[in-house]
Figure 1 (cartoon, rainbow, N blue to C red):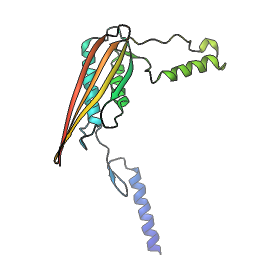
Figure 2 (cartoon, helix red, strand yellow):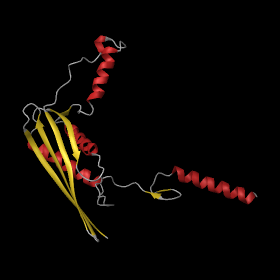
Figure 3 (tube, rainbow, N blue to C red):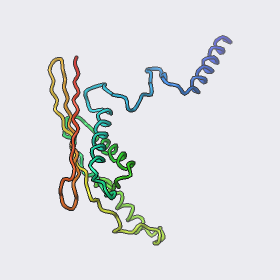
Length: 198
């Protein structure tokens, strides 16, 4: 019995020491989990993945910043990015990466997108109509800055497959439109092909 208790104590001590370690991999009972490089090329399947998102964002941001269109730090909003592929792809995630890098550049200001606008309206109403706030501190209605440009885009794919090969071609197109004039001021696209063999 005492041998059993000793073994149990040894096991607990070993687990306790293991819990204090910060190196990977982390071992679970049913699998091994490793931290990886978020920028490493990911080719688990031919479906749209993190590397595709990163390549698209890098291409679009680089192209936009090269144009010089952001003279005077104009305001931009994100309209719609349509997913015309047969996969579920969160196009908002793609645009968030593009927006984050552009904001960090300091050359452009983003205003709320159409999808985010209701949150802004709700907050203005809460501050101005609830009676909870000093009038001198509330955000005033009618003071929002309008967007000079809107970003619109689409993601399409062509899939070809036979018994041994699957080929997926993605094309991401993004355009910047002058809201007042309706003119396309900038447009670019990124093409990605992924092929797998059985």
